[in-house]
Length: 104
Image (tube, rainbow, N blue to C red):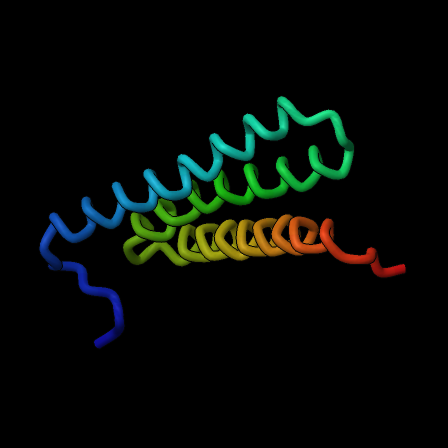
């Protein structure tokens, strides 16, 4: 009666999991390395926001996926995903503002 398909074909979930791990995992590693290499404080902050946002997204998705009928796990997964979206958004805003005048 809802959106969730509990008896779906398992290969679809496995392919989606692999795609997320490859995309957000490489995104996380890229910005973690940028955080380690960078000497600029603003660049370090931007890199760590993006890296942690990607890492939290990697954790939040599976928590939401395995929740089943456990409402608290759904809520935890959703909160983690929203937190990661906010961190990725904030890091992206910092990325775009480097080439323009900062707002004061």
